[in-house]
Image 1 (tube, rainbow, N blue to C red):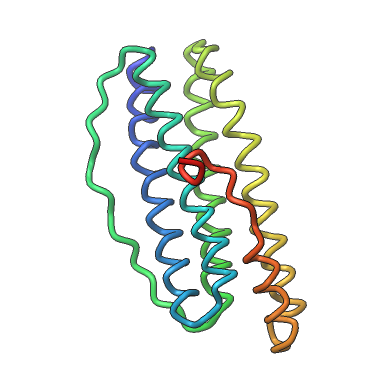
Image 2: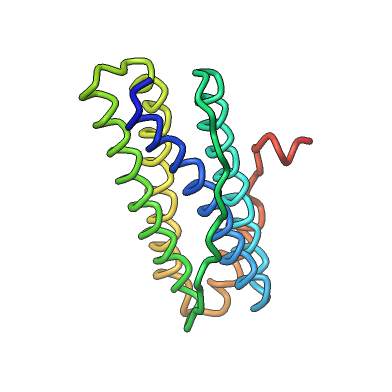
Amino acid sequence: MNEKVAALLKDQVNKEFYSAYLYLAFSNYYYGVSLDGFGHWFEVQAREEQEHAMKILKYLQDNNEKVTLEAIAAPNVDFSDHKAPLTAALKHEQYVTSLINAIYREARQCDDFRTCQFLDWFIAEQGEEEKNTSDLIAKFELFGSDTKGLYLLNAELNGRADTSATAEA
């Protein structure tokens, strides 16, 4: 594996764990204001991000790359309203998409086709992540200012299935 591609993937492991930590902070915020559906939604997101990190870690291990786990930065979050975590999540997903694209670009430039193929899943996943977050923001904008609408949206989010492997354990 190309040295630069390996370094980018190793860094991405940390970034994915940071994403999980960030979404736990969002979840914690929503639980703190009694919006347990929103809290649950971000809890599920956090577990998905952990799975993404583990998938990349396993890929590196399978390619005989030594991985040193680095410290995960504490999220600096302080929200002024209930929409703020949603818009922060979309901005973060767009950032993660840019990181995945950069790794893909580097892998392609050095003819690392196996890593390109591995990253295809992440590229599709990031499209889904951005769409889901955008859809949630759109729903919040439609219903969030109405207490009954917010209540129903919160209830809908509380029903989000957790299909992660860690939830099944």
